[in-house]
Length: 361
Image (cartoon, rainbow, N blue to C red; front, top):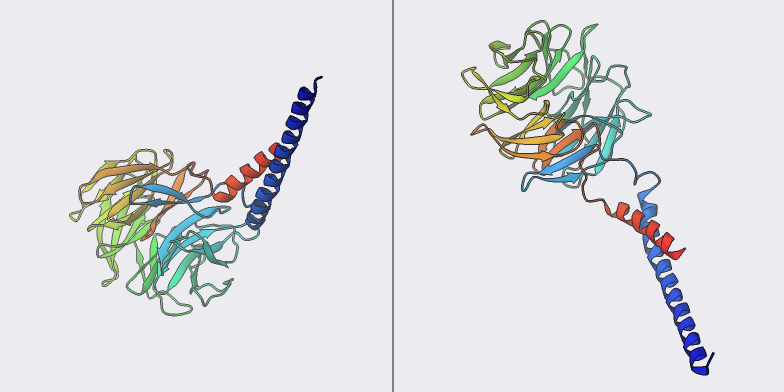
């Protein structure tokens, strides 16, 4: 080997060592920057899919929400999003979620029972109301603490709460086994009902609005409106199927009833159906629209209540069912994985860490 060749070989060798050193230093610097954020993510937090998503009405964008073991029901009110769920340690937990950031602010545990009431919560009248079996619990934000053990009210023996709504300073619950609706004054720590109205053999979903409290009788396939002022039923409407979710908008009642559309009950009691497909279940009104979750299709449909037309359909994830509307967006609980969205920074950091480890050897 000539002197020039040996000199070129040494130059290439030293250059390669310099590049490797620079690369190693870069790996160390990059890893040092990533490790704090990965440590902050905590063990197990990067895995698992979110069970709550948020749809922004402007552009119908889908954003991820907090990851939860399960989501039973959603409600908005008192400047928060309220989520009924559970953990491996507690079957019933009420979470307060900041609707602007999607972060969990506080949680309250409720007594665990064998019977879970999915979706049975309401937030109004200065409290959050949660049904567990035959008992109704009253949680006052900032006052009730991290656990509530004493029920606000309990149905007669053998009863089971089907739904909860608030209206005009009172909380209304229905008994699925007796077809009876009870009204409780909301301003006390515990209460007895001041009225009871029987609407049929069974009682299920409820909604407050359009001049009364609406209650579904799934067996009879009817929905009854109770006048709060009179304390009695003043209207009964027959529906195509057994109503599962109710909402009110523009002096009309909206419901899902096992068909492939959302049924609308007009002021005169006449019904019409707007096709949305995919086994519609959950309902909410907000941002001037009616929002319908289609469980089989994995979508959230936006309906204009003034024209009875579908204006948008957004895919949100596997088996959506619970919907709640807030000024910051429309929240949807999903039973399966949410729609694939842009991964959070910590997930990107995790993949970057894996790539760097392979690169650095």
